[in-house]
Image 1 (cartoon, one colour):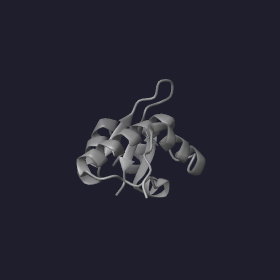
Image 2: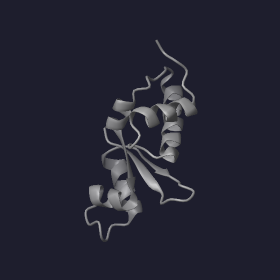
Image 3: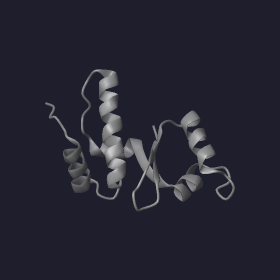
Length: 108
């Protein structure tokens, strides 16, 4: 049984069940990404916050460099993002109005 999920429902679900995993701007970006994926696949996706949290992680630039960079003190973030896209999977840059921008990385 599937339910039509709006962006607001998507965000509320994560705030209720997995509040520490993603920022609101990251959740908005993930919602848009998953909606586009549904369109590309031609079939609905299940809203499974646990699975999404296993598949995706949000990082600040410093965290991204520590986790994926060869030399966190010298690697430019843009190069690390490109390397992740080539080796690991999707990376989405999340713009924050007042906070530091973050990166969503699909880890599987």
